[in-house]
Image 1: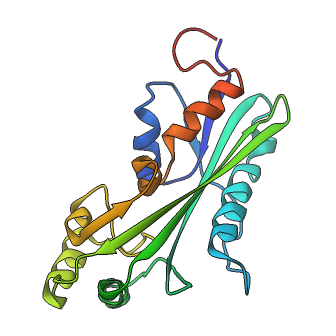
Image 2: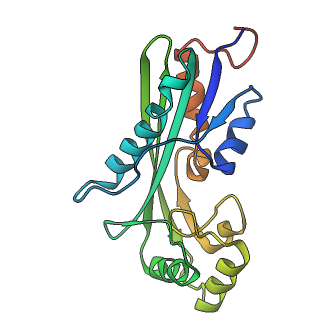
Length: 197
């Protein structure tokens, strides 16, 4: 019988990505403080939160593989938090027109039975189209409502049309869960994606 796989996330996008591997898994809401730490580098913040999310549910699953993930968007060395309002989302997107920004996606995977873990960080560089108007940005935000998304966009949806160029190693990382790295880690942890355990 395969070891239980647990996604420590309430994100529908991460769950949808994990379903691509066609393996059974459970989702659980992580219980951790996601507050920023003054002076923390964006990639360190993403890594810390991914670790905290996975570790927050370890006691509930003594024989499982737990996956935690987090994303941090950065513009001009400043972290772009989830906007929360239409106004802030429009403001964030408008600021992105003249300069590229980064999206850091961190993932932490724990095998609770063997007490081993792996952490990876993926960086993407993104360029918003310079010719996107304020009206187009507002229409996008009102239509797709990316108010709980780092950077104020959903690349898995209509948000992709806002961009001119994206550089990354793994497109699934941009959406929230780096499946290329996850596949490698699960193999290292002797979790068989294909075939019986």
